[in-house]
Length: 300
Ligand SMILES: *[C@@H]1O[C@H](CO)[C@@H](O)[C@H](O)[C@H]1NC(C)=O
Ligand SMILES: *[C@@H]1O[C@H](CO)[C@@H](O)[C@H](O)[C@H]1NC(C)=O
Ligand SMILES: *[C@@H]1O[C@H](CO)[C@@H](O)[C@H](O)[C@H]1NC(C)=O
Ligand SMILES: *[C@@H]1O[C@H](CO)[C@@H](O)[C@H](O)[C@H]1NC(C)=O
Image (tube, rainbow, N blue to C red; front, side, top):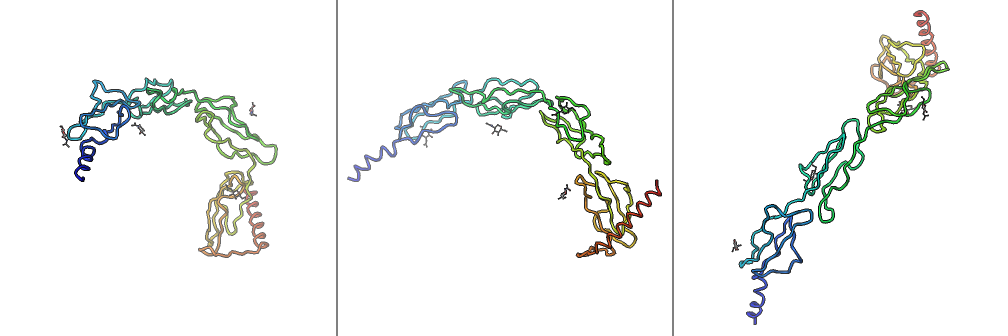
C-alpha cells in the first residue's frame, strides 16, 4: 500500500522542473504551468520597453532530464526613445548617458533665459513602445516687470519692462518737513530671474533716533545735531568708569539705537540691580545735553 502511494507521488515530485527562470528583460509567453515535465519547453518574449538583441539570442528553455532548466540569458535590450533635440538657448543633459527606456534627460536654459515646460523628461512606456514623458521645454527670454513704486521715493529710470540683470536704482524724494527721508533697504535691485528682483523695494521714511545720552561718557565720534538712519556714535567712558555694552551704536531703521546704549559705571563688572532715581538721571542728562550743545556752538 505504502509502495503504491510512493510510486504515485514520485513522478510529480522528482520528475518535474521548478518554476521557469525569471529575467529582467523577458517574460514568459502565456500563463505559467504549476510544473513542467522533462522535455517541455517554455518560450519568452521581450518585456514592455525592451526589444530583441541583435543578433538574436535564443528565447526558449527546456526542462532537462535531470529536472533543471537549460541555461538561458537575457535576450532583450531597452528600446530607445526618439531624438529629443536641444532647446534653443538651452542645453540637454543625458544624465544616464543614453536615451534608452528608463533613462532621463534634464534641461537647462542659458543665462538670461528661463524654462517653460518640463525640466526633466523620462523615457517611458507609451502604448506598445517607448516615448518621452513630455514635450521638449522651451527657453524664453527673462524680463522683469517694473518693481513696485514706493511712497516718498522713486526709481531713477522708470520702465515698464527691464532686461535680465538690468538694475533699477531707488532714490528718496526731498521731504517738505524738517527731516529728510532715509532709504531703508537696498538702493539697487537687479532683475535676477523672470519677474524676480534681487530684493524687495526699499522704504523711504523719516528715521530719527533720540539724542544718545550715556551718563559718565563722552561721544568720541559721531556728534551731530540730528541722528538719522545709520548714524553711528562712539562713546568713551569718563576716566575711572567702565564700559558695559557696545561702545559703538547705530541708529536703526526702528528709530532706536542698535545695540542698546551702553552704560558706564564705577564697577568693572555690571551689578545686577542698577537703580538710579529718575530725577537725578534727568538732571545729569540735561546737564550733559547742555554741555554738548555748548561744544557744538563753539565748533561752528
Ligand atoms: C543537468 O543536465 C545538464 C545537461 O544534461 C547539465 O549541463 C547540468 O549541469 C545538469 N545539472 C545538474 C544540477 O546536475
Ligand atoms: C538616471 O540618472 C538619475 C540621476 O543620476 C538616477 O537617479 C537614475 O536612477 C538613473 N536611471 C537609470 C535607469 O540609470
Ligand atoms: C509707478 O511710477 C511711474 C512713474 O515713475 C508711473 O509711470 C507708473 O504708472 C507707476 N506705477 C504704478 C503701478 O503706480
Ligand atoms: C524694532 O522695535 C521693536 C520695539 O519697538 C523691537 O521689538 C524690534 O525688535 C525692533 N526691530 C529691530 C530690527 O530692531
